[in-house]
Length: 174
Image: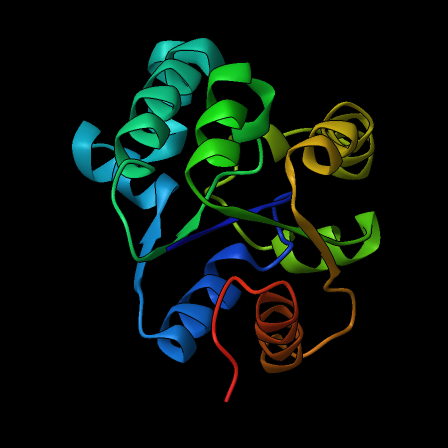
């Protein structure tokens, strides 16, 4: 069984992913951390040196590789859905959960994070709005389940996901 978390930066994919993996006794894997580990460099450096296309190429290879494993909760990067190959891997190899959040919540959660190259702009809100316009339809297209995370404690989100997984017969209930 694989659970793949998609959604914009600041939606809580890593935090919720860790908690969900513990709840379901599955391995937790973060695509962005795996890219950094394999590259031997952080994401801002990869963006600076290789550009977004170079980063997306690395991401596509890592998503393809990681989604071939089983019994994991995988947190993807916010832009993973941009490539059709990634969407196909996610949809065909696991259950995809879209962690949906507002622009306001994204701004709040990412305001002090220096590890987000796409937000190195004069107006981060404008950037997030533009990204959401492009990506939200792709998140919706790719997902099996949509869960709102705004102003919610991660435990509540995890509980909702588990209930839906039981309801849809993905996992056994108690």
